[in-house]
Image 1 (spheres, rainbow, N blue to C red):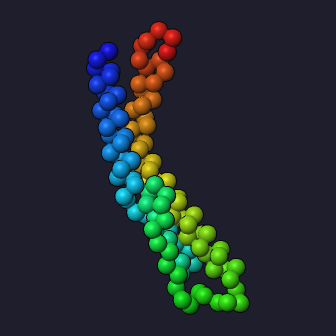
Image 2 (image 1 turned 45 degrees about the vertical axis):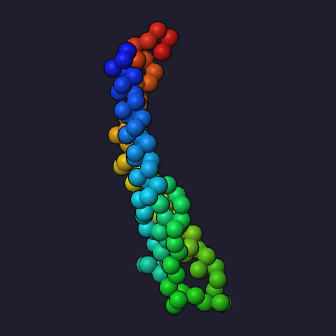
Length: 107
């Protein structure tokens, strides 16, 4: 039982370290072949939005809005991929300890 608790504590420490790393890791999303670029942390905090001046058209604000949304979505996909890369092995390990993996009655 002590070994299982030790493994769980180690996994918790690894999980916390991965979460801290994701909070600082930055990903970039873009739309319109780079006309709009969004940089955010892998945890989802938007850090910057860069808009190429040639896309700014007062007569066509909708296109700019669509490009911003597209860049944010692209950055979110990149963040999700990085999260899966960093947290995937840890989440798989937690599944080994959960449920009936502990060998405890009623688990």
